[in-house]
Image (tube, rainbow, N blue to C red; front, side, top):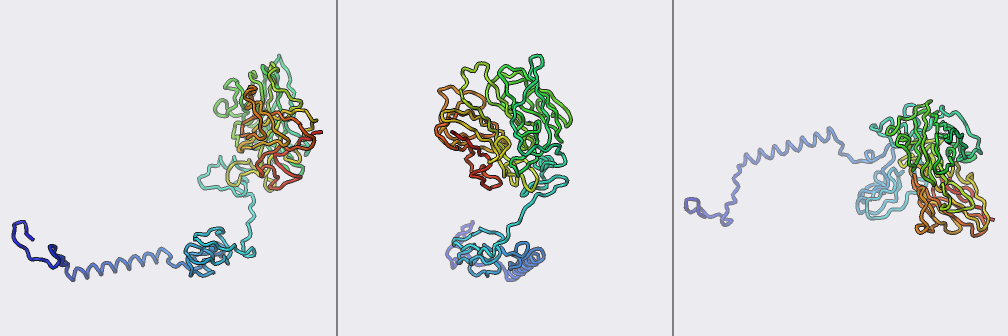
Length: 457
């Protein structure tokens, strides 16, 4: 091997490269001592600030329950890691009280924990957040704003000013006063107690002490004036869903108008330009106010009835969800702790819903209104298909009409369908989501919730 000056270097025993260590023994000793000191310091810090002992005591859940259902290896004892299959060992059979049920992180299937060893399900109840009553199971974090909690809280029962008779019905037609050719209606919003079943009562936000609010029956071209007196404990507005009207009359809180404060009155006035199935509802905190019952039907006849689909009977179905727990009523929402447990058609749950009575050969127009706040309801009619003749207030051309037996009615949507009584008997109208046809998860007389009957003779 030559150096840069071309002189010959001694040969190495490894060929061309000299692999002889250039480190002295004192240097090796110094590095060894430093490594031992660093290792000792690391162990000392871990002992001071950490816990290296993975004993049964460390693996216990609050209350002394083991994390049973998780077997980390085949040698783990039943007392410490019962059934915890993170290794390849055989399942232990889950002998402890399981605090993490269903968690099997290995490849082997384990037998279920004996029923006698399962923990008792805790009973959840409404909770208190300051002066607010919150629903059971609601997840609340430190960052949740107070406004959100107020929206989700139970109705303040001290604000109830009226209890409706148990047999009272909502969606009652409201007759107007006619003043100089203008149809004048008076609305009053308030907190009431309302029976959705003979033995189930909710606290509701109502228009004119009924749920749904009164039905407005108008004719295309009518000039209307609606005085809204707000007796709720919070501001509100009324939105006229789907109607063409002046922007200042649209009822969008803090956008087109200042919300109506408690005790105040606001007057809406406009000319009805369309015909069809419409509705009105709160547009101030609608997830709360509309979800507690502040809505109603608005039906408009055409000036020229020639093109309107004909039916022998006419029935409106306004759909809603409710959350009632331990005597408190909360607005039902799609979130943890706020899912509904009752469902109503026109403010009543089956079997307290209405029954439509028909004769063979007659036709009924069913007006489905998605006055519900959060949920889609596939509404189905037994006894044969119906004809879909209108959607969102617009009558479909004859070439666009179609036969079906189920329509998905989403929040805010409306469908008009014609159903003909073909055979004698009792026929069901119901939502096709099974949970939505129960009352607090229980079937009553073959159904519940969003169910009603058509009796054909």
